[in-house]
Every structure is written in structure tokens, then in C-alpha cells.
Amino acid sequence: MTNAIATLREEAAERFAQLGWPTPRIEEWRYTNLSPLLKIDWRADDAPTFVNSPESLAGKAALELVFINGRFAQRTGDTRFGEAADVRIGDWERNRMVALNYANEQDGARIDIPANTVVEGFIHLLFLGRGDGVWSHPRNVITVGSNAQVTIVETYAGSGNYFTNAVTEIDAQDGARVDHYKIQREAREAFHTGNIYIREARAANVTSRSIALGGAIARTETHVTLDGEGASVTLDGLFVGSGHQHLDALTVVDHVKPHCDSTQLYKGVLDQNARGVFDGRIIVRPFAQKTQSRQENRNLLLSETAIVDSKPNLEIHNDDVKCSHGSTIGQIDQEALFYLRSRGIDGDEARQLLVHAFAGEIVDRMKIEPVREQVGRALGLGSGPNG
Image 1 (tube, helix red, strand yellow):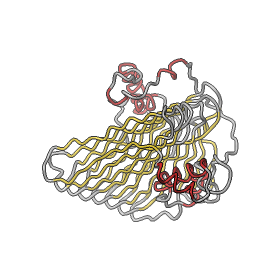
Image 2: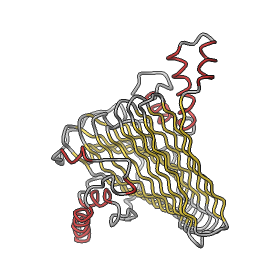
Image 3: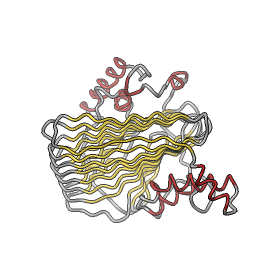
């Protein structure tokens, strides 16, 4: 460990000690309470035992890196890349969970895609949590050179009462094209907090898809800075919860430069006593003229006790923009349900078909077939056992 990294760890630890764990008294955390995490005396597992996982996409991915409890465990695939410089995009001075990650940082992918390189296939980063009372703090750094193209898939899964606090930082340079997926399928008794930071230079284009299916309490924040003229980003999200799950999605898209475009579509499906949160913020800076931004959150509640909190908002500092946002919360369409039942489909199957149609819009937009199939099976959208 270099002196600079050691110093940063100390500073991040001090900053987290000053800020403390987030509480609902903080506006960004008003709907999510992490107090159950404070009841556990978390420990690191620096020598985890390797185990095979059904979430592995080895043989399908150009490169797969597996991490267990925050430590590197296995590499599959012949594809090789250089190691990315230690770019620090995460806002550890204000974001408490990023400060906690930096202070306890473990292993993660450090990948540099050279300029003008087109990576065939996709890179899979698989993070597995194992055991009770174990926490992990993986950190990924992906730098994508000018006019390069790459697809990155992150999968989080495991077994036990563990806690994953992950940070991923993506630096997309001029004209870069990045297709990014985060699939959160943690164990039902596990906890997950994740921060994705994306910085885009001139004419870069990033698509980031976030799927949240697992965890007792799980939150993913996606922070995008459009820092080059003509940059664009698409954010797709889907959270599906049941039982007493609490699934939280926060997005911040910061339009810094002119002629940038952002599109967001997040969907939530909540059943039983589950609770979902969508907090989306679009910022348009004073010199970000000709901005175009669209943000939409749609939610489907399958029970009278399920709850969703939706807070899309705009912060616009100039008047030469086209921005819109919206939110809908609804129940199963009874007319559609009646129509299906009148065609001989029983009630449970008809209800499931409507849910699949609602969630399938996001899943069908996923370009990587093995990932789309894996998520579809977990949702019961395809053949095979549910995940």
C-alpha cells in the first residue's frame, strides 16, 4: 500500500467518523433506515474459501473476475487489459458510504480499456458474500479511453447475513461507449449499499442498468456527471420486492456542459409488506444550454400493504432546456385481469402475466443474452428455476 493510499484511508475513516452512519433525518436517506446494520459487530474475512456459484457466467463472458467477501478469488477468460489508474470519482467527503468504502477498501476490478479499442463480448464482475456478520468493501475502477467500447456486468449474490458496501467508478473519455449492468441478487437476509459514479467526457455515451431483486435492505446510488459537450446517458432501473424487503434507488444526473442528453426509466414492483424507494434528481448547470432530460418512475403495487416512495425532481439553472419528469403508482389493472380470466387463464397466472409485462419492458432492453436470461429466470420470465 502506497503512502498516498494509506493517507486517503485514514482521511476517509476520519470523515466517516465525523459524518456517522446515514439516518432518516438526512434528506437523501429519509425513506431508508440502516439501524438494523448497527446491531451487528461486522468483521472482515480476508481469507475466504472459494465456492462455485450459479451466478457465474464463465465461458460466456470474455473475462470473469470473482470476488468473495471483498477478496479476489478467481479469474476466467483469456482477455487481458491494463490496470486502470486510481481515479477517485466518488464523493467520499460528502457520501458516507463511499467514505466507509474508501476507509476499508478491499479488492475490485481495475480495468483500463485503451483508446479506440472495441471489446468483444462482455466483462463479468461477480461479487459473492458468504457467512454471517461478514462485511465487504469492494471498489471497481473502469477507465474507458477515447472512442473505445466495452460492456461491464456486475453481479452481487451470496448466502448468509452479510453486508456488501460497493463502489464502482467509471471514467468514460471522449467518444467512449459503455454499456453497464448492475444485478443485485443478494441473499434475502443480507444488506447491500452500492455507489456507482460515472463521469463522461465530450460525446461519450453510457447506458447503466440497475436491477435490484435481493437483500433485506438494499440501496444503489447512481451518480452521473455529464462533463463534456454532447455527452449522453441512459439509466434503466427495476426493483422487485416481496416479504419485508426494502429496496432503494437514488439517481443524480448532473448536466455540466451544453448539448447533453439524459434519459431515465425506473420501475418498481412491490408485493406483501415490501417497500420501494425512487429518488431521482436532475441538475442542469447555468452553462448547460440545450440540455434534454427525461425522467420517469412507474410503480406497481400488488398488495394493500406494499409501499413505494417516489421523488423525482429537477434542479434547473438556465431556461434553454427541455426537461420532464413523472411518477406513477398503481395497482393491477382489473380490466386486463378480467380479460385474461375470461380467456380461461386462472387468477394467479393472469396476475403473473401482467406483472411480467410490466417488468419485462426493462428486462427486454438488456442486450446481453446470458444476463437477460438470468434475470428473466429470477423473475419467472423465462424457463428454468427461479433464482
